[in-house]
Amino acid sequence: MTNTLRRSTSLGAFLAYSLSPAMLFADVNLTSRWDMMMNPNFKGQRAIEDCRIKQEKQTLLVRCGGAGAEMRGEVNGRDVWWRYILPDGVVVSWQGKLDKTATRIDGKWQFVLTDGSKQSGKFSATKHRN
Image 1 (cartoon, rainbow, N blue to C red):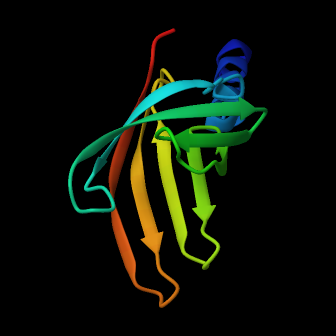
Image 2: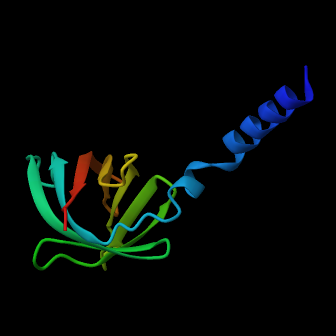
């Protein structure tokens, strides 16, 4: 193998390992209004909610609906999650993946009651164009 080819191969390997999803999405800004479709929602029906996501560094604050509770979460590369813990200990959480354009999140939501029973579904959220 020639030196040029060896250097080219080494550079390719370096880039493949060093450009992790977290690095590629490091400058993503999710702050915006989002339309979130839940299928099913907590009542077993398909529903679309108007949500607002505010991002500061990796921390997310998410609020859906007019009187929805503020939920906290994080973005790490393409991985996104947020949750809310009700006063009685019930946990509602969302976990998803960003698409390559960082304008859509697809994932699953889960509602865990204090007795351990669970309800879950899928969601997709689409970022509004500002």
